[in-house]
Image (cartoon, rainbow, N blue to C red; front, top):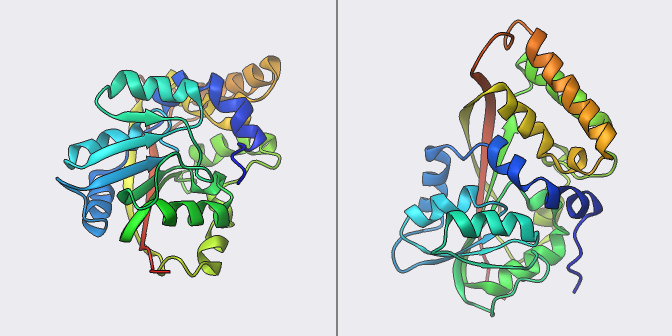
Length: 258
């Protein structure tokens, strides 16, 4: 079973942990509450936060009272999580090679990451670690590109994507359409506004894997373009705090028996 990371993730995320923590938003309470209900999170329940990053979602799972274990392959990301959440057991591992025994958790959550996985392998591994009837929850914060300056922000980044996977492509859904291990996905959406200083928006861009993986000169050129956008766009110029809008998509499903 393979456990290698996509090249963009392996090259970009190790150097982007600080930017990720500074520039990425949390998740809206209503989206997390919906997953908590659907996955029956709470006291006495064990949940795995898979590809946990710096712990943005992990921290919200702890609040449910569940026993939380985090798995994150990038050591630099995992170190930020461990410093912020010392009570959470954090382990190296990937979705395709989860370092837990079979049938050991009641739920698995994935924030901002399932599109990176090799879907068929990941679903088999997730199903393996779940107890019978356990649940899987997915969350993505997606920038609202219906707002003109946010669309321009995305236009600055996308030419550098190359083959890095994207949630918006919906390719990640194909594994769910093929699998017999899980039920049909449920879905709910919520709005989110991330308020942050201009350099926080710069950090948001710097936290993107394929931007972080660029050679230093190219990366700094992209970030300078972002600063110029923020300084000149009527919706952002002269502001000490910028509102970066998102749509949050939440999905859930339950494991079928085998």
